[in-house]
Image 1 (cartoon, each protein chain N blue to C red):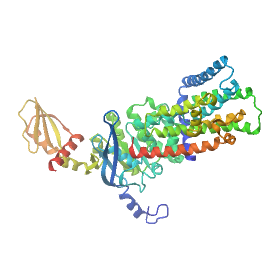
Image 2 (image 1 turned 60 degrees about the vertical axis):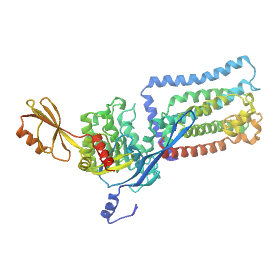
Image 3 (image 1 turned 180 degrees about the vertical axis):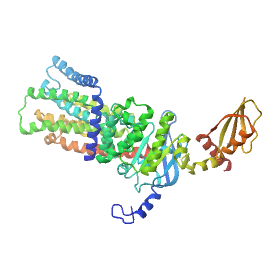
Image 4 (image 1 turned 90 degrees about the horizontal axis):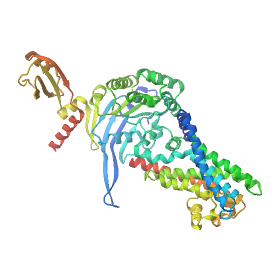
Length: 339
Length: 267
C-alpha cells in the first residue's frame, strides 16, 4: 500500500487513492466440484461455477445492494470477500488486503452479520456477548464504551442488555447482532439478509440505523436482500447477480428501466365503471369498483393520479412496487430474447 | 499460539458462565459424568472378584493402567472434547461465523461448548490413579516418580492430537465422528487393560501406527518394572513427550490441510 504506516502529509490525496477502490474484484471466480451419487457406488463429478467472472469496484463509504435469486452466487461472493472461501480465479482486494491470504488481519477491519445465524450467546445476557467481542477484538476500553453506547442508543437496546439472548424476539436479536458486528469499528459491514423475518417496526429501525451508520461514520455497507424496499430506502447503487454473473450494476431506477418493470396503481372508484382510459397506463384487472392499472416503474405516478382524479369519481388509491423477483425475471427474459 | 490460547480461555469462560445459568443441571451432569466413568472401573473390580490376575497383571497394576489412561484421556476430553462437533458445524454452516473472527479457528472450535462437567472424568481417573499408587509394589526411583506425571500430561497431549486430527478429517467426511471416537474412547478403554491380553498385531498397531501405547503402556510398564511391549528398547519409556510433540505437529498440519480444503470447497 502506498505509504502504509509512514507519515503522509498529502492526506487528502492518499484517501482519494484508497477510496475509489476500497473493494475490488477483477474477474473473480469460484468453481465447486460437486459429487453426486449415481447408482450404488459410482459418483459423478460435476463442476459448478457459483461465481463466474465477477468484476466491480466499491468506493469507501458507499452503500450497495447485492441482489439475486437463491443460488445466484450472492453468499459465495460475500464468503470470498470475508476470506471464508478462497477464489478459484481472479483478483480480489478489500482495503488493499487479499482476504484469502490474510483472513485474520482482515477480520479486525470488517463486520459481518449473517441474517439467519446469530453470533450472540444464547443463554447469557446480551451484554456478555459484547464483552466477549470487546476482549476478542482487543477494543480499547474508551472506544468500546463509546461504540456500545451509540449502538444501544440508536438500536434501542437499553432495556435488552441484561436479558438472556434466548428471550429476545427475532427483531431484537437482529439488532443485537448488528451491534455486535460494529463494536470494533469495522470499515466495511457485510449484511446477509438483515431484515428477513422481521416485523415492519424492526425493519424500519434496522434501516434507519444503517442509513445513519453510513452517513455519519462513512462505513461501507454491502447488503444482500430479498426485500426491494431495503434497497430503495438504503442503496443508491444495486448489483444484480444470477448464475454467478453480474447482470446489472447501477442505480435502482435504472434497474426498472432495464427490466421494463411496471408499478401497479390500485384505484377504488365509487361505483362500477368500464376500464379507465389513461395515457401510459393500461388496465390489467377490474373487480367491481376496483381497478388495477400498470404503468412503467421509471415514471412518476403523480400525473397519472391527477388525471384519473379529474375524470373519475375516485374514492381511494394505492401504488404497488414491483417485487425484485419479477423485475429480475423480466430482465432475463429480455436478455434471452435478444440473444 | 498465544493468541489462540487467549481466545480459547475467553470462549471457555463464556461457556462456563452459560452452564452456570443452570446450576442444578450442571451439578447433575457433573455427578452423572463421574459415575458413568466410575462404572468402567466397577467392571474391573468385579472381574478381579473372579480372577487373581489379568494377563499376568495384578489388580493394583491394572488400576494403575486404568488411572493413567483415564486421567490422560479425561484431560484431553476436558480441554477439547467438543472438537468432534466440527462436522456438524461444517454441515450447518456455523463454521463460517468462526472464520470471520480475528482469532484462530482451532481455538474457537476447541473451546466450543467447553464443559466443566468433564472434570468428573478427570477426577475419577485421578482417584483411581492415586489409589493404585498406594497399592502397587514398586521400588520407586526418581525416574519412576517423574515418569508418572509426565506420562499423564504427555498422554493427554497424544489424545488431544488424535482428537484434532480426527476433527480435521471431518472437513472431508462430515459424519466421521465415530471413527475418531473409536480411537479416543476406544483407545482409552484399550489402554486401561494390560497389553498382554491383546493380540500382538494390535499392540504393534497402537505402538507404531497410532502411537496410543505411549499414553501409558510403554512408560507404565517401565514404572511397574516389566518389559516394554512390542519389542521396544527400554529408553522408549521416556519417549512419551517426544511422541506427543510429533503427534501434535502432525495434528496441527492435518488441521491446516482441512481448513484449506474447506475454504476451497466450502463444504
